[in-house]
Image 1 (spheres, rainbow, N blue to C red):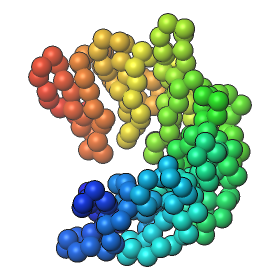
Image 2 (cartoon, rainbow, N blue to C red):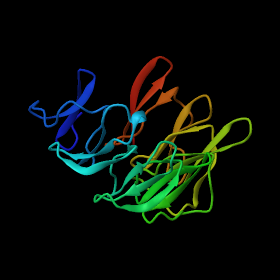
Image 3 (tube, helix red, strand yellow):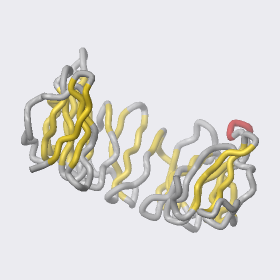
Image 4 (cartoon, one colour):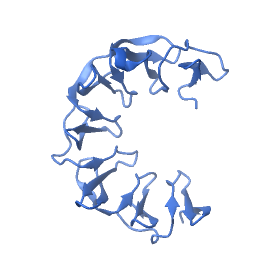
Length: 238
């Protein structure tokens, strides 16, 4: 799909980018599929395992930042995660290629709502754009914040997992009590009891019981895909 006016396509086992007329804006020299975020595209040449060869280009195909890193992630909220060498920690750079959050994490996800999910020693937490943790808590499972300002987290009971949600300041919003859960979008999230799915609002209030075999996220129009047995349909918020 097109993002930032360009789309990534594959030719002769290498990737490049075309504009909406189908005209190439780069050569087909990159080793993996990528997309434009905030006007910059993370790319790498060939096999990353063979050396430090990842960097960023713009949507016209011009190199913007030197290929100094082993691996790079897309820009989000002005910051991009980079890894200097294989097995080395991840940090975040700005659009000038300067570290604003020093490498310290085994794994990272892009920023959303001023928060980034980070992992160290198989434990997850969240940091702000200055690199400071927003909470002293760590989680066995965790997921990025969404545009709703809520993040899904999971705790192990030793036998199974229970999922809940936290706020942007790290405080608990909905206690972990669901056998399965999805992220919040447009004010609602799908949760499951291990057998079927239902929906809740950001206060944890159920919209209905556990009625569905499978569900999708609500859209901006307030419509969600659902499945009951082998039949699919859609539900709409009142």
